[in-house]
Length: 251
Image 1 (cartoon, rainbow, N blue to C red):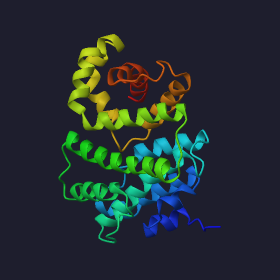
Image 2: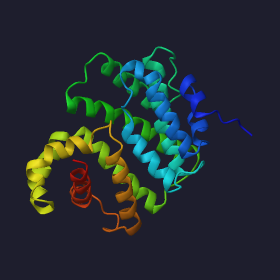
Image 3: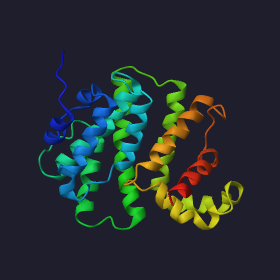
């Protein structure tokens, strides 16, 4: 049986493969990500740049989702591998991205962050989102093409929330415009509060929005409220009201 290295060993070496991460329990992955941030990533000014992913991992842990060998597990392992190898590349400790396209994207993001080139919010968020998107797509490919797994209907609908989140990061001006148009249907106060709300929702340094979003998206996915026919406006109208309530509760 293959040896599973500890979260601390993986965070120190930065060379645990997606296959190794897949064998980790979600609690260990959460510890691993936190150690990567507080350890090597902190050297690049990224001690808190994946707190939003912490929120998702804590949701998986508490709901016993993503056990090793499942579709969720492999996708998540691809995301974490990309982050890990991106840190290693950015620090000059490695030249191999382990075949994960997200590795180079994360390395570029971290290098630009360290140089102070990502101080403009929408520029930062686009770079972050593109790196995570590449890692996520690699994880999906590993799950489906290498291991022959397919997501359940609930998992697929839940996955749409993560896609919506990354789309929001890449399209901040569009989201603000959409909220200006549709906010009156959702919550009139949101019209004037849409900027701080979107700032909170898309802050990668916060775990609460992604944790709340995961709880809500999974509940909706189980109910299949609109028979899986999700478009951007559908998702906006479905998710924003409850997320806005959470935002107001934290103010």
